[in-house]
Length: 354
Image 1 (tube, one colour):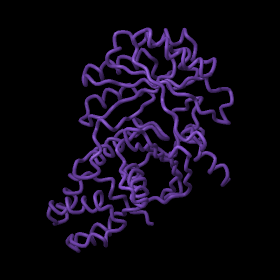
Image 2 (cartoon, helix red, strand yellow):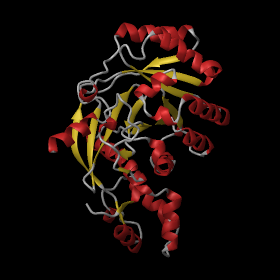
Image 3 (cartoon, helix red, strand yellow):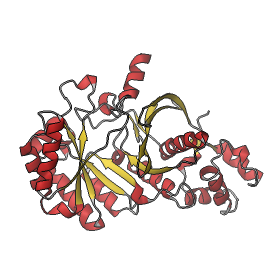
Image 4 (cartoon, rainbow, N blue to C red):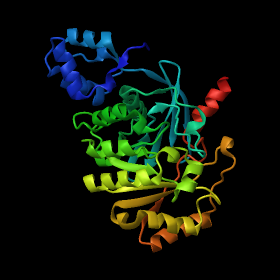
């Protein structure tokens, strides 16, 4: 590997413009694109029927591989957690999950995270940099190549941008990534099969609503009031519910698309009946366009003050919301026999190396 930029960071239009600026036909971009995303070549020399001057130019400026597999954990339920090593030595996590509806990949957008949610393993190591769009795309390609190698004809069908980092804190690279993976001439992952999660950056939610991305939005809420949300999510100090909820309203009015409110259930912290009733009141008239996704907590050693809610509490919370006519689901767990919490594998490997 070298320190050239990843060619996966360019959309088809960007690649065509780049080639045209250097004296090549724009049409060559479609050929290259096909080799990258349909034939999924490992190196530029494999692009045998592309003009060789063009291939050499691309090889001089770009790389197809900018990360390597460092650790891989496989769960009995088919979940695979990859730890990839970047060119600069940093480590990132990517997770493949098997669902009845298809194969979903959870991607990381930053090296570390500065949001600092008090229950989360991702924030144990502070953000050192944003990932480039090509590094986010390459996570999908690495997983797809793993599936190709297995020879079962499986393909990545869904993407969740919920790995390490705050996607909206790396908005442009995140947006470019989405434009690449949903392009119908490439991986062709439908926009309704892509979900981006944010901890609640209100101004970026508005920008997201105004974008042409057309993908799903999830909000990490985790508490129904400011006092409790500030206690477990420090971002609420800067962006309290009085700022977050109007941004959500803007998104709902602009797109008329449903959003998901993610709610991690923490034992005796935010999982009581009164919290469910307060959450229903907060949702209010937005019920038709909001789904609450209840998430059983994966305990993290460094956050021993939090424990997983009892099953009875999870069911009671669910039932309370249902009785308030709130759309609600409980997230199906994946990889519970491996380092299930986001960021946990990375944190352990870095500590081991120190």
